Amino acid sequence: MPDPAVDQLEIRLLEQAAAGVADARRDLFERYRAAAYRVGLRITGRHEDALDVTQDAFIRAFEKLDTFERGASFKTWLLRIVSNRALDVLRKRRVRIAAPLDNGDENRIEPPAPAISPESGMEREEIGSRIRLAMEKLPPDQRAVISLYATGDLTYGEIAETLGVPIGTVMSRLFHARKKLAALLPDLAPGEKPKAAEQEEVT
Image (spheres, rainbow, N blue to C red):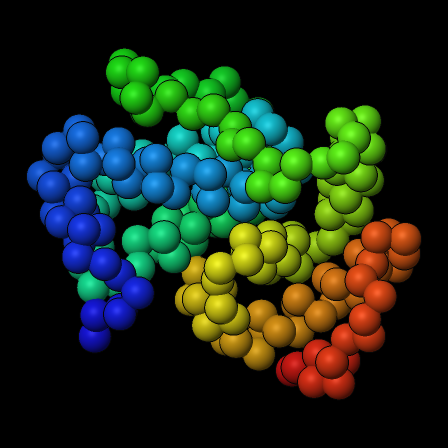
C-alpha cells in the first residue's frame, strides 16, 4: 500500500532516477543528503566515515532503484542503508577516502550546516565533543536507534522499519540509550522526568 507521506514529485523523481536521469538523482541527493549525513555522523562519530557512509548509501540506493517499491518512503529506505553501512563501519573501524558519486560537481558531498545556530562556537564545539564521546560509549544498536530518533522526523514505526526490528525493540533501545546518555551528560539531560511508559523496559 502506498505511503501517504510520499508525494507525487518524489515518485516521479524515483522513476526518472531509476532510468538514469542525472538531474533526478541530484534532486533526490539534495533532498536527503543532510539527513543521511547526520545519521551517519551520529552512528560512526567521525566526519570522514559519515561522508563515506553517505556516499556509499546513495550509490547503493541508486543502483537498486529498480527493486524499490515506488509507494514506499525513499527516505526510510535510504536511512536503512545508511544505518547498516554505518554499523558496518563502526564494527570494522576503517576509514576510506571519500570520492564523489560521479565526476560531476553536483553530487559532491559537503557537511550540512547545523540546524541550530550556537551562541558560542567554542561552546558548541565543546558540547558536540562531549556528546560524540558519550555516543561512542553506547552499544551500536542503541546508537543507531537514538541517531535515527534524533533526526526529529521519524516515528517509532519508521525507525523500526529502517532498522528491521519490532517497535518494542526500538522503544527499549531508545530508553536505555537515553538513560545512559543522561548519566554521562547530567548537565545536558532534559529536566523533565521520562514518561512512565518509557521507564519500563520493553522486551
